[in-house]
Amino acid sequence: MRLRYGTNPHQAATIEHPPFTVVAGEPSYINVLDALTGWQLVREAAERFGVPAAASYKHVSPAGAALGETVAAAYTRARDADPKSSYGDFVAVSHPVDLELAMVLKRVVSDGIIAPGYDEGVVEILAAKKRGTYLVLEVDPAFEPPAEEVRELFGVRLTQERDALPMPSDLPDDVVLGMIVARYTQSNTVVMVKDGMTIGVGAGQQSRVDCTRLAGEKAALWWARRSSDPLTGVSMVSDGALPFTDNVVEAQRYGVSHIADPGGSIRTPEVAAACAAARIHWFETGVRLFRH
Image 1: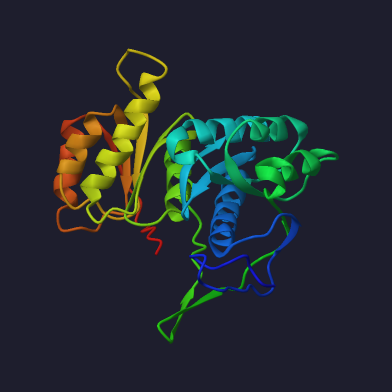
Image 2 (image 1 turned 135 degrees about the horizontal axis):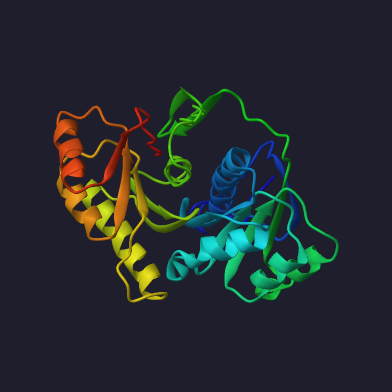
């Protein structure tokens, strides 16, 4: 199938064997990347926690992701994490789209959605967005990808085992959700989570402390819209080992009570000691979650 265009409008692009049906609109290369990455996140989160999950994607990283009692609640919470970054997002939801979610989407600026189904009358509401160009994809929820992933870059073919390692089962729920979100976010990544929703995602930074600072600033802004009291009870997940204790110092500024990272760094004992001194619960997961 020919795509609308590639990463940029001057690049032609095609797709083979997509695990989704195009219900309305015409996908671009980036739409497909956002859709398939977002779908993996919400599917894994919903399977792990047994409730609807939603993600708001921009440029192959989530601006926000959340769990909810309904699919509309999950998306509302996901978009509320960073509404500025969610402007013009691609939506991924784990459950069929109902009228409640369709009416939420009707009011916001968004480019498209991927879901495992759509209730009667919902597609017509969504397809009318963006002067009739809103992209609606219906994914096959039974589709399982191959065990190996293949990428070509500059004429070179790279093959690796797909990252399907199960998340640890003995961690707090917010930490596990943060790990799932980090798995589908561009590295370097730090994710801050509170009560089943991301409140700050610092993605794609070369310096990990910049990831922490960016996620923390977003978390603080999220909290400022709600309360003047100090923010507390935040779980922070890093996709790679925290290399220095400056990350712990930054985390303290944003009400972080739990930190999880893979560990294994030469300074991991220093990081663990800094967390203990700050009365932050630290978890060494042993699982690196880089995504490039």
